Amino acid sequence: VIEELLPAEVISVDTRGDLVDATLFPDEERIVGNAVEKRRREFTTARACARAALAQLGFPPIAIPAGERGEPLWPEGVVGSITHCAGYRACAVARSTEIATLGIDAEPNIALPDGLLAEITGLDELLALRRLQLAAPEVQCGRLLFSAKESVYKAWLSVARCSLSFKDAVLTFDLSTGTFTARLLVAGPQLPGGTHGRFSGRWMVRSGIIMTAITAPASVPRSPS
Ligand SMILES: CC(C)(COP(=O)(O)OP(=O)(O)OC[C@H]1O[C@@H](n2cnc3c(N)ncnc32)[C@H](O)[C@@H]1OP(=O)(O)O)[C@@H](O)C(=O)NCCC(=O)NCCS
Image (cartoon, rainbow, N blue to C red; front, side, top):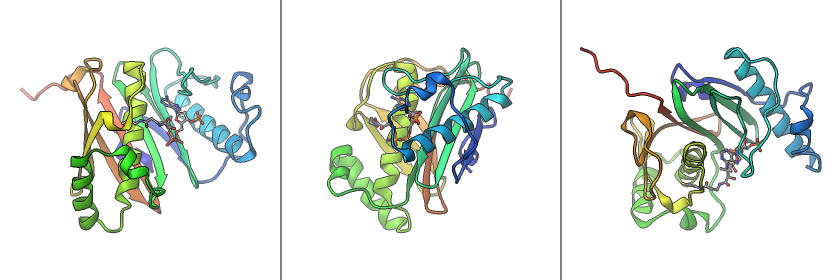
């Protein structure tokens, strides 16, 4: 499903149910060795999605360990992102020669817990969000904002290698195009494609799940001559 939000260079594999036959490599087993069953299942299914996606880029089945912040460690020359929530697991990968960084996130289309919205939004964002909520009552817009910020974080971390707090990115959503823009308030790396200080993303809601995705191209698209 999430492939609708991603450019053709990105390979995604997703599933609504758990893949009961999926197995883990020892390096991955260590990550969830003491985890509860629910966490094991989401982790194992998402790793299986990741291997299926990597296979489409020509990789044999390989372990995808985790870095010190929990981020998946992709083979050389690959960028990628993983998400899971109740009833959905997904992975997206691409060659780093084509995509500089990417982040995907899925969340149930339900209201955020009390108090969380105030923690993750600035005042301007909050006002814009109220307008968006009036225009799109079927979307839990606070949750949409949260998901989009998680996508920003995942895309940011693999290029900036440092953390980003929720209020370090100001997001603007466009209902008619299903797009959003993230303006970063902290200094970060210059990305190809002129995306310095800014990420562009896409979003949608399908069968009760909010999905968001950020991709940044690895080179400036050629303008038609
Ligand atoms: C790490 C984080 C982004 C994960 O998002 P989430 O919505 O809780 O959970 P999701 O299921 O969508 O994503 C989990 C997957 O993200 C990946 N992930 C974890 N930490 C990551 C990181 N630091 N960077 C990139 N990807 C990360 C992992 O693959 C993880 O799944 P796995 O452990 O099974 O491999 C989130 O927990 C977090 O720490 N957020 C705080 C920081 C933030 O969002 N700032 C906002 C900046 S605007």
